[in-house]
Each structure stands twice: as structure tokens, then as C-alpha cells.
Length: 247
Image (cartoon, rainbow, N blue to C red; front, side):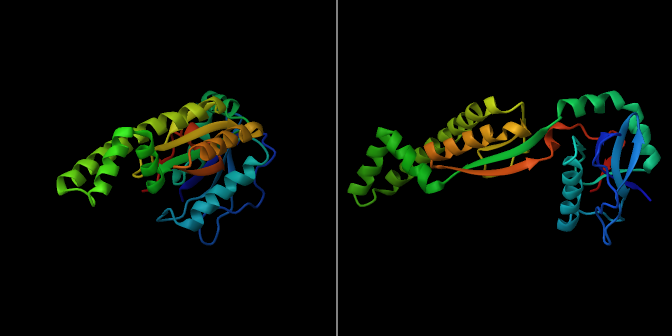
């Protein structure tokens, strides 16, 4: 049976599993594969592995429990190797790299920050900030909504103003949050977000990043934040070369 890989840590990590349960139904027991002074948290890999909610949560739980005792390099869900021997051989071959990443990510966590506009609030903001646009709105209102051409012209002007504001707000969020992070990783583009970034921060000082986000919320009520964290630093770890990912 193939081997499922949750994460990599030092061989002397104090929080290595004893009877910890991982993915699968029934839940599979987590064990370790060791090599190069490192230990990989692994279990058997279920057949037809898919990213179901229960298994996603189990994967995160293993990393959270092990992470409570020290630094763990998290593998993304679906990382599978041929067997334990293949995992151990990879640890031996890439020991220097993994040791370097463990040192770099010691006591670090990840926060993913997504930002979008509140549609009504951003419309009020761009109209208030641009006298010409405000005059155009007032003209249309005074003439009962304006002609079809007036409405089309206003719509195009508003769309451009909002698009410009999206770019400006994306730069603002980055400028305000960047000083509070050790590293930043852009997340995959998703529709509807003007910012989607992952921030690597020291666990003991993460309140500085969260405080900066709260200040932005209060100062710019047209911005809507979705913050996810603290998380294992998925976005700042190179995945195991020997692992493949379930489709």
C-alpha cells in the first residue's frame, strides 16, 4: 500500500504521534518514517483518495497536534509516496534542504488574507472622492435618471473608477501589512478578490499583523476582509520531491 505524507519534522521532535489517527475511514494510524535526522509523519494511503471534508480536517489535525510540540513542514493534502522506504530515502537525500526549511520556519505560522469590496460602500466612496463623477450622478438624478446615453456613460465611468480603486486598495493593503510579515506568498487568483495573499509571521507577534488588518477595516469600511489563520505555513514549504498528489 502507498504511504500518505502529512509533514516533516526533526527526528527528536517531542510531539511525534503515539496512536494518532489520520485520514481514511476507518481512520488510519499515523506513524513515522525516518532518515537524515528527520521524521516524516505518515500513514497508509487510502485507495481512491479524494479531498473530502473529513479527510481534509484529519490532515490538518495531525499537523496541528504535531505542531504543538515544535516546527513541522506541512505537506499539502494528497501527498503520496510509493512506501515508507521511499519517504525515508527522500529525507536522506534532501536532509540539508529540509533542515534549512525547518530552521527558517521555526515558530512561524501562516495567515491567508483575502480582501474584496463592499459593492454599495465602494460606489459611495468613488462618487464622493471624484467631483466629476459626483456631478454626473447629480445631473442624471436631476433629469429623472438621464437619457440612455447618459446612463451608459455613467455606468462606464463608475466601472472604471471602481477598477482603479481596486488596484489602489490592493496596493494599500500590501503596503500596510507587508512590514508585519517575514515573507509573503501570492495565493492563486480567484474571482471576486482584490487581494489574496498569505503572510508568514512569528507566532508570538502575529497580533501586529492582525492589528494592522483591524486598523484597515476601521479606516476603510468599503473593504471586506476574510482572514484565515493561524495555519501551518503551507505556502512557504517546498513539497517533498518523492511525493505525488492525488487528483
